Image (cartoon, rainbow, N blue to C red; front, side, top):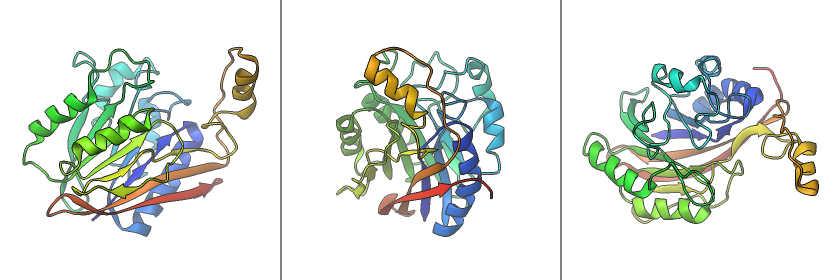
Length: 265
C-alpha cells in the first residue's frame, strides 16, 4: 500500500498545481491515500473554505497544518465545517478544530493522521509539548488502526528527528513540513517508521520559499520590513511516497517526488 504526502501548498499557484498533479501522482504510484499540508494555501498564509473548495477534485484526503493555521480570521469559524482539515494537535484544546483523525483510504482501510507543531525556533508560546501530545493521541488510537502518519511541522531538524526517533515502531511515518525545502534524509528507522525532515513545498521555482525574490532580498540586505508577495507562476511540487505493510503498519519504502507545473491539466 502506498500513501502520498504533499508539502506545504503555497498560494493560488500551489493550489492549481495540486489540483492538476495530485491525481496524476496518485495514479502513477498507485497511492491509496493522500495527505497535504495546506497551511499556506490562502494567499500564502492560512486556510479558507473557498480555497479548500478549489481542491475538492484533487484527491487529497486530509490537510494538515502548522503555525499559520489561523492567519485567515474567518477560518476560526470555518474549520468546524471542514472535516478534512487538522489543526496542530498540541495547540490548546480551547481552540476550534481537531488535531488528529481516522480517515478511510479508497480501499476501506483506516488511516490515522496526526498534525503536530514544533516549538524550537517557532515563536509559538501557545503550543504544548508535541511529544506528550503524540503519546496521548497514540493511547487514544489504541488498536483502532496500525496505519498512523504524523506531520511534524517544525523548524529545527533536531526536533523533527527526535520526534521520529521517539515514535519509531509506534507509527508508520513521521514526515516534516514548514521549511519549504525538501531534505535528502528519507529513511526507515529500525522500528519500521519512515522519516523525512521536510517534504518541501508546492510553490514557485523562481522565488524565495514561494515569495517574490526582490522584497525578501531587500529585507535581508536593508533590514527594513516589507510585504512579501506570493508568486503563482512556474510552480514546483514536492511530495513523498511511503510504501507500507498494512498488516503491521510498518513502512517498507520511502521515495521523494518532484514535479514542475506551468499551467494546464
